[in-house]
Image (cartoon, rainbow, N blue to C red; front, side, top):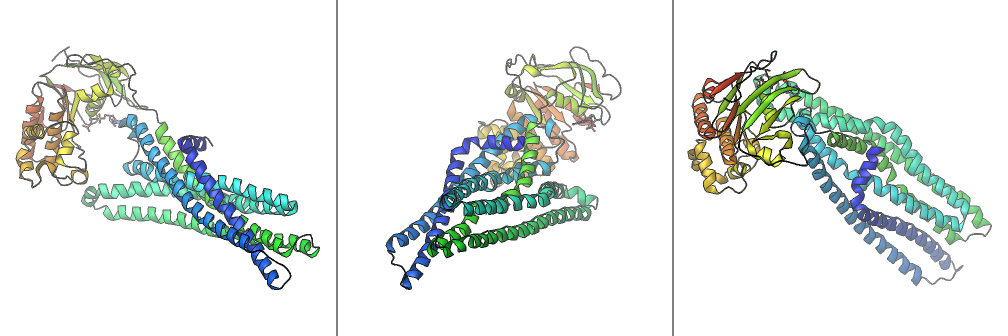
Length: 557
Ligand SMILES: Nc1ncnc2c1ncn2[C@@H]1O[C@H](COP(=O)(O)OP(=O)(O)OP(=O)(O)O)[C@@H](O)[C@H]1O
């Protein structure tokens, strides 16, 4: 229930648009009931007039019928326009709302999520919330207002008929869909879970295709994706089948309601309490009244899957960030990196870093070495404040990281990682990520430093060359050198290198190392590597040992 309350809260800014959409929908339903009622009365009266039993002024009812038909069509068009516009506005608000909650979580808080799963939540689940207005709120509110109005009108005409219709509408719009919900209860959540699993496995298949091919596991992964797809289709088929059965049941209830109305009204006509045209008017009005609850079965059918999507989105948005930005940041002073008796354990895990102290000033470089799992990357993560140390403190430019603004922290650190993420844009756009206002000349200078100038200049479109998804058009070595150029543009005093030459051939390694040497001049460098030539960039090495306290370093290198 609290998920629904939160969804309604998110809809609050659009409440007037939603109300207008509901008013239009009610207009459609009531004009339809009125159209059917007047038509029933008019046709029967015309027939009786034809038999000479009645005199009839037919201009007014004929005009009313045309007017109601036009009103219904016009209101329907406007209703579609308004409700879809409100729905798109809600989705357009939801996505940035979720992104602003994800940003403080990244990267630490999102590591537990698979890429495809995150994508499913960002795309599929947010899209599924279009149902909130289109299929849940709108139909329920319209049914209550329009159905209530019809029952009220019938109550004024003859209350037993109103009672019968109220009962029919409650059964068709409430009881039948609720029984349907009991059957469908599981399948909504099952479809959402199956879709998320399918997306995650499909993402693994496409992104990990090279590894899967190397290990001969493509077929296994394809079978897994097929099994996930089959599970999803089975869940959807079951839902569609149940939906069809209950739609038929709902319309059966509608026919029963009309039949019951006839049974109630015929004696009234026989006893001359009611005229023939009036009976036709009421019966057709009762038939049209079914439209007021026609959207309720779909609302019930979408309830579980929509709520499951909402729950998954709120779960993600509610995760507490690992680190919080201080509301009172202090400005950075002279460049310097200090780790003061730092210890760290991942949440719920054993201690990874124990009592590590070091100090770096510009022009100094330090390599972190040690066996796999010793905590080298963890130190780089702590310096970037993905997590805060469990004990001790880290300061950059004389200020504890916890007291630095996010902008000063990010602006003070450049990173060259073994996993370079390149965006699906041009070379210039990828470089300007580090310095949005950089001139073309500055970009060429950075490429020069990274030994990439000649290759980019040889491309027909130069800096405007598009890189494709994940930088697909560049080789691994070119991508790594582009990352060096990007770091050069950032002009940050601290440079973090995490296995920057991993996976490159000898010639490319030498080019990247030459670029890094230039880049490091006058900056502080913290390097994680096993590569002897990269190690040679460092003036000092520190050995991390997962089981013992870190070798204490002198106060300065
Ligand atoms: N997000 C995380 N949550 C929990 N434990 C983690 C996380 N990241 C790393 N660890 C654990 O912390 C320890 C240190 O990992 P880290 O990646 O820092 O080692 P490393 O020295 O860089 O290793 P390698 O040389 O293999 O990259 C490992 O035992 C690892 O399992």
